[in-house]
Image 1 (cartoon, rainbow, N blue to C red):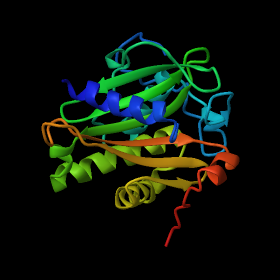
Image 2 (image 1 turned 90 degrees about the horizontal axis):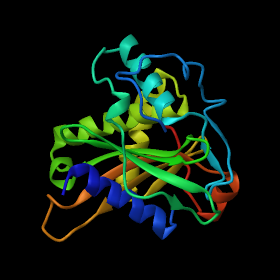
Image 3 (image 1 turned 90 degrees about the vertical axis):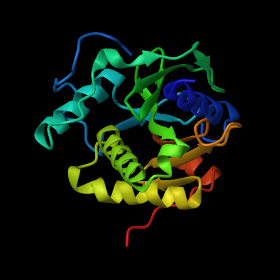
Image 4 (image 1 turned 180 degrees about the vertical axis):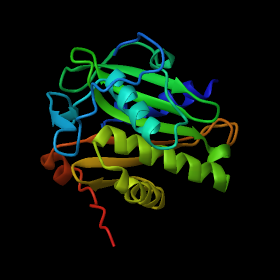
Length: 224
């Protein structure tokens, strides 16, 4: 099974269990349509099961991702038409239709849940197979990717990178989720028969309402 399918299967399993619950055009996106997104307006209210969504489409996420990359290390750009829709449209418990997307890299897959009607993201994630994650250098690289992904989606400044990485690292220790500034930082692991090559890990970030934070009894990440 392709890595993207394994990761997407894990994403679907998490969502369908209800525990925590686009467009394709052009090539490398470097536009500025999402350049004004910041912590204040990166998320907005929604009728979906989480009560919130990101205030950007998958294309806008890709554009912002590449715009920041261009200003920093100039590597690791994403290409809009490498995002592929996975499987059939699902409907969440509130009746909101959701599309699932994935993006393959050599050792990593990005995943995204997107509202069908608005094309805005519900959550964004990245993961790999457990055999890769158990290698310290790969683990560090994935944590960096997850932190950068969260920075872009959540409108965090580049100064927040280490904090975001620390949150995901702590989520690994918790083997679950932490809450920070309106967002769930989630770590999921899926153990499959056949060993580490069939088992996957996934980091995700998504906004939720304060009411759900309390209902889910989420632990808030505390900066030292």
